Image (cartoon, rainbow, N blue to C red; front, side, top):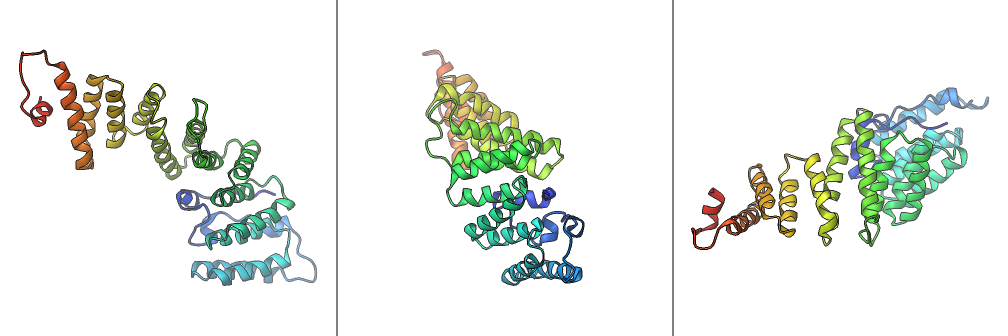
Length: 302
């Protein structure tokens, strides 16, 4: 049995942690445990459901230790219930105990090795522990099992961004991060997950504007893609202007610098840099002796 997908409210919290939620019930739709696992005859089905309900209330009230205790009691009643195991792992992660989270995910994966939710949970904990190879392996496995779920692609992008030496060539890890973010964005839109699409677009734009800062031959196409994704963001327009300026394409640099300056929220420091780009382009267009520019302000006004 695989857990049902995490809801939109749960997923949008990826930038902090996929586990941090106000309550278990708001995190995902819990499958019916009674239909999946039979309760032993000497146990009360009500006692199991009561433990789950009490754990939800305890977590909602912020009593994580109590919630964990209740879930572990439920686990004793039904040790193969993946939902309970998942929630225990989730709470350990919320308490910043990645190793316990991994341990419980391991326990669940021994029951169902194809649980994409548990693979994802373990991968996130491994990522935060710095075990990037293990996280990558879990995410690739989750994607292989369900290539239509957007979240593993997004987390895999985050893993690739964490690797050192990620800009060593055109097939480097940063490019792989961008590729996975792109796939995650497409799937988030396809699955009508608007909040997650907004989040991953932000992550993707950040990766694009930072890609290959020391390699002008590769950087331009990434800056252009960033503008396509965020045409109304000053940072994408400014970074493209900056790149054109580095490439010596001053007319193009001036055009994008002017666009960046026209967008609300641009910091004064970056506005000054835009003015300098525009001024430099303006000066280069002047023919010697024909006219003079008195100030940057005059050039920008032109």
